[in-house]
Length: 117
Image 1 (cartoon, helix red, strand yellow):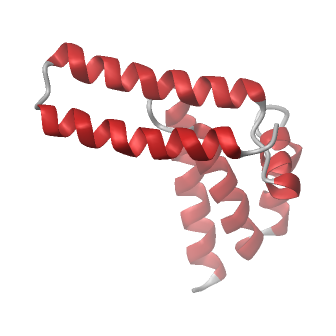
Image 2 (image 1 turned 90 degrees about the vertical axis):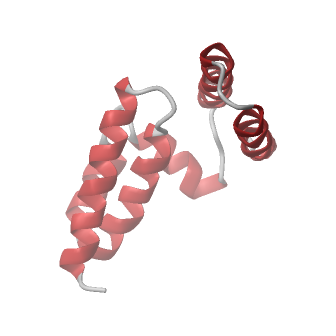
């Protein structure tokens, strides 16, 4: 893939991450980590901008250095998953949808909790 394509995908990931700040259930940090990876393939300057960013940089560096998720990040992720599941219950979604959500979220929660702080 070309450097341009990686840059475009990197900016798409940044955009989705920024939307995730205000939209529950959309993972901001995951998209910023993805953007750092994509920018690493296209523009060292953009990658460094993300790594130096006061809000996103520490989480990206923790992930890249140790595969770590901060306790605050773990708590936010677990609370967001619980909120999405609660909203699904309140909306009265079909049982199979709620069960599928619960299974997927249980897998994600297990992974999140298994990561070092």
